[in-house]
Image 1 (cartoon, helix red, strand yellow):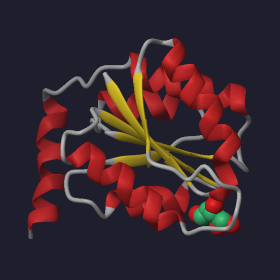
Image 2 (cartoon, rainbow, N blue to C red):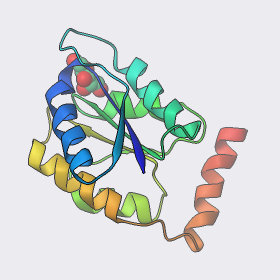
Image 3 (cartoon, rainbow, N blue to C red):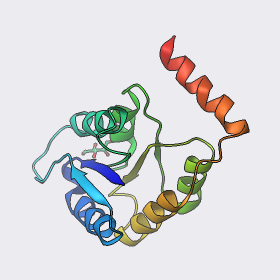
Image 4 (cartoon, rainbow, N blue to C red):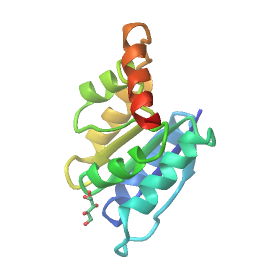
Length: 146
Ligand code: RB5
């Protein structure tokens, strides 16, 4: 399992904590930046995470900015990406089970590191259920293709 992780300046410390958490779980991490707390633009890093996942370079992605909103919007512009912003574990878990989310986003200015770890674990430990959900996920892909 390889996870691409990317963030803007608002989330450098959060990214490092989640990166260490993932590595502690034996997961390979591809760090897409930024490593600097100088002001930068979240679309750059959201797109990087999205492209890494869409190309198959990474299995899943994690994108973090101040709120998680901007960077998830950027990742969702990449074809094949289903990114969701989560502030608690239940939504993260259901986004995997029902929506087959492939990028998890959260906000470093919204939640603390311990909550981010719990959200990450809930997301990683859940499995896509397929079945009735596949029709709806296929419809998301159809929207992209229109
Ligand atoms: C940066 O100040 C902030 O706007 C960004 O991290 C994010 O919250 C945007 O959605």
